Length: 59
Image 1 (tube, rainbow, N blue to C red):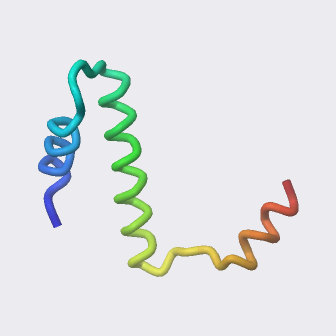
Image 2: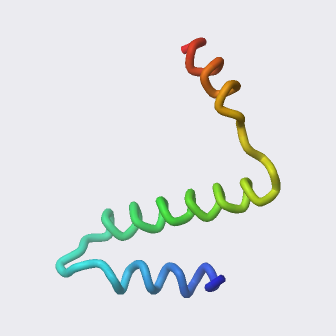
């Protein structure tokens, strides 16, 4: 798996020009959330579909 720095550089480099700082920050934010979600999933920190449905019903 590429390092966090390598992943960030690749993500920014692939963005079309012109790009502003808000677009860059958003892209990095999304990549961070995806990475953290994958890590949590690998540790077994997930929510079952039934539990999620119950939680949504409480909204």
